[in-house]
Image 1 (cartoon, helix red, strand yellow):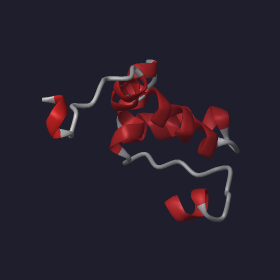
Image 2 (cartoon, helix red, strand yellow):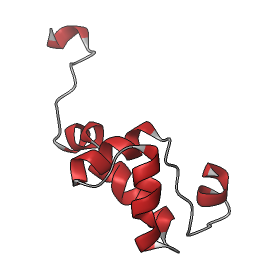
Image 3 (cartoon, rainbow, N blue to C red):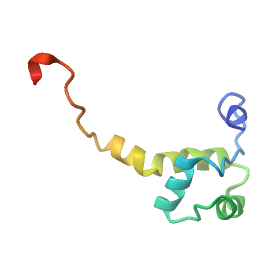
Amino acid sequence: DYVRMRVLGDPDVLLPGDVAARAGAAAAGIPSDATGLTAWSTRVAPWRSYLMAHLWYAAPVTQAWRAGTPEPSLRKDDR
């Protein structure tokens, strides 16, 4: 299904088992269990691939990444 969505450009693919999408759903206040997310997503059909993109963006891990958490320096002279 991921290939159908990303490579073939199918606009109506939902990946209810995707951990990041489920975390994003929980963060967005929509059902995050696979069954609940699948049922809820019928309201956005036939655009569920776009829902997936929004859920991935809403996932807490991407929220932290976008916050710009500084990475530790890898150069010896910066230690």
